[in-house]
Amino acid sequence: MKIIFIILGSITFAIGTIGIWLPGLPTTVFYVMTAILWSKSSKRLDTWLSNNKYYIKYVDEVVFERKLPLRARIGIYLFTAAMMAIPFFKSDLLWLKFVLPLVSLAQIVSMESYYRGHLWADGIPFSKNKKNADE
Image (tube, rainbow, N blue to C red; front, top):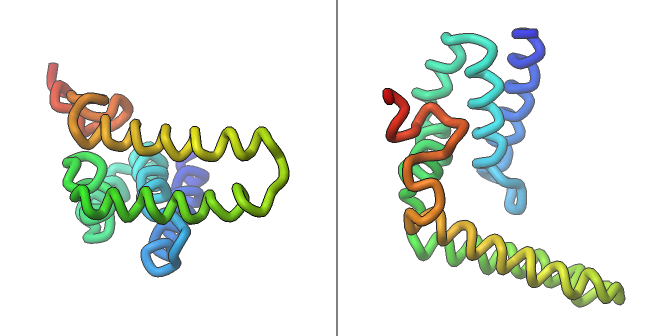
């Protein structure tokens, strides 16, 4: 089972690294998946990932330490809205024109709740970065 976690973690790490330079491909979600998969596979890989400069920059600081500035979050919201505008204006599906703005609003509300400390104030539940992990 460990080899499967290592292989899947390597794939998500590669995709996440490509996402640094390829607009529209998320980085953080793939690095979080890598962290989960590699932490389940081996202590050595978990330690290596935790010390990796990309993991520290795109996951640890942004996700666990909540250091994504408001300006960057606004950029994310605008980019996401622009991507959602394409199917919104190209499609004639009424349900899609209803769902896309709701998804965009849900993204803004959830991200702002998280970064302002209203959501998971003690840390992300599944992570080892919880404030109350020693209790």
